[in-house]
Image 1 (tube, rainbow, N blue to C red):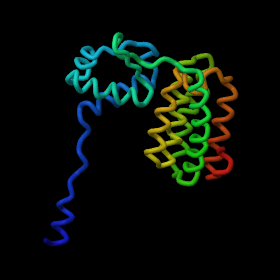
Image 2: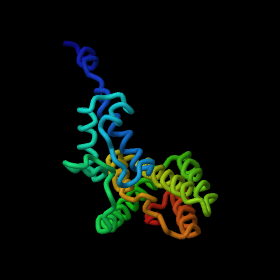
Image 3: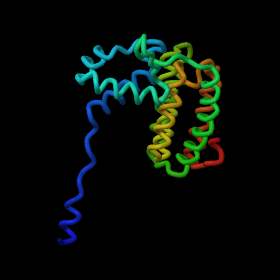
Image 4: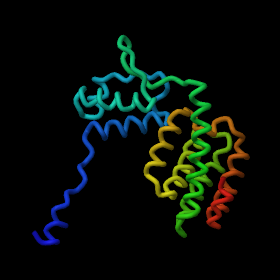
Length: 199
């Protein structure tokens, strides 16, 4: 067999299954608070919505339960998981460490175009004074854009799971002016590629 034949024999990565896609879409609905805590997750309705079998839905719900996003009860079925104050405090501490890591990695790997893309959701947050929903959406986009610049899919995946545990986002309740000022400092540090200043 020639080297060319060996190279050509590589198989492409398998496409996500219907259950995988349903898991991803359902996760996003929970993370973005489009499905609120305590919302019932009826298997037949979900199967119809996603165009998959109830068996595939059960698989998706099991995976989301393992991630802490769904709670299941033998009698009442599945629902979006309720809040746990102690877990939230723990998640917030872990998230702070991971966001600092994401910032350092982003500062080391950032491209010339990245700061402008990070600036866009920052402007959205800045303009959202008094509009919690708009501010939450912009804040999430801001932090996830920085995490994307870090170039670590694993880190990005963990961050998504942690953010999902905060209905209004981990910055919920923080003064608007304080968030805007912190974002502005972070952008300046990233433009300089100053990893030490982003923590």
